[in-house]
Amino acid sequence: MQRFVSDLTSSLGALSEQYQGRPLEEIKPEIQRVWSDRTGGGNVTDPELTQFAEQIQAGGQITILLK
Image (cartoon, rainbow, N blue to C red; front, top):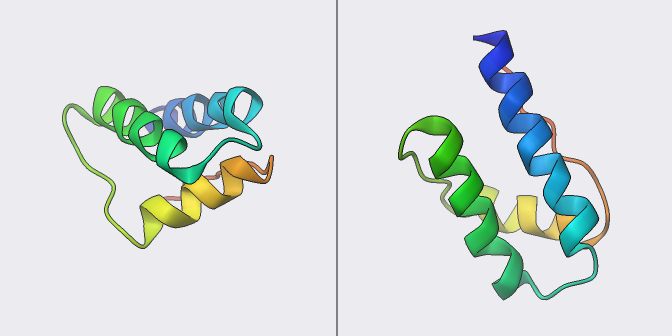
């Protein structure tokens, strides 16, 4: 499970390099695509989707944690 989380975090982190400074409307579909690809069809819903997109837009990193 930790490897899955690490892979998802890494994949989302790669978006930050490519999408920093881009519009949220451009970033959100990419987050959904990565999330779906890595989770076997899962979705990210608001407010998390917007929070992730804002982090990426600002050049920040996203870290997924297990509960």
